[in-house]
Each structure stands twice: as C-alpha cells, then as structure tokens.
Length: 167
Image 1 (tube, helix red, strand yellow):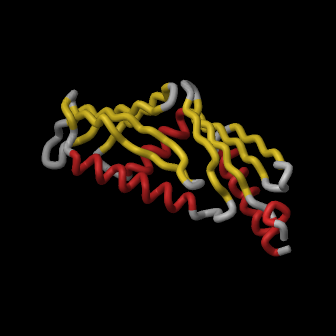
Image 2 (cartoon, rainbow, N blue to C red):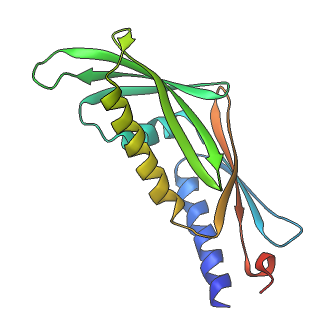
C-alpha cells in the first residue's frame, strides 16, 4: 500500500510541476496497470531548462529554436577577461536510452568557428549530470520516447505501479 501511495504521490507531483510550466499533459492507464504520461513542453520551457543545464554565467540571452528532430541554440557568451561578447551556436539532440533522457551538444560554433572541445565536453557533462539527477527523482518512471517538433518537445514516460509490478 505504501508503494502505491508513493507512486501516486510522485506522479501527482510530476504532473503538478509540469502544469506550472505551461505544458500539456496526458495520462492514460496501460493494460498492465502502469501509467503512460505524455508531456509536451513548449519552446520557452525548453529554453529555460537548457540555460539552467549549461550552468554557465558567461552565457546570456540564450534562445532555443525547436526544429524537426533537434534543437538549435544561439546565445551570447561573454569573454572571461574582457567585455567582448561572442555569438555561440550549437545543435542539441535529445533521446532516450535505458529509460533515461540523453542530451548531446554538437556542432558548436563561436563566431562561426569551431568551439574549444574542452567547453563542449564541460557543457555536455553538466547537461548529463542535470538529466541524471532529474531521472533519479522517480525510480518508477522510465522514458519511452522523445520527439522534437517545430513548437514543442514531447516526452512519453511509463510509470510503474503496484498493479503493473504484480504486487
């Protein structure tokens, strides 16, 4: 009984949190008793999450452009020891692996030239750490798919319940 209450509480918290981010949510029960949670996040929410995930105070005015299958990001990046600002662009691919969300930054350019691979590696690691922490919030949730369209990023999650586990 406690696991069922915990799972239901977790799902309600996830749904409440997502509702506050102006996303659309659909919840259905699968034939085995598990829940199917479909979430669609708009571009502005994705933009905020990318900015937080990069966790780089030198990056400003980040804008995410949702394209079919990937996200194109453009931002200003201040130089460390000057007031100069460079234009930063990169491609962000989202996916699912073993029930978790994956994100890979590639094709990074600063003022039209390839960026330092050390920065790219650091940003990829920061995003991976953020996604890893988010994935551990509910051990009963497994990501089944991620889709990126021109106006939203869609996620389909499977939430295990007592019934789907046969308890």
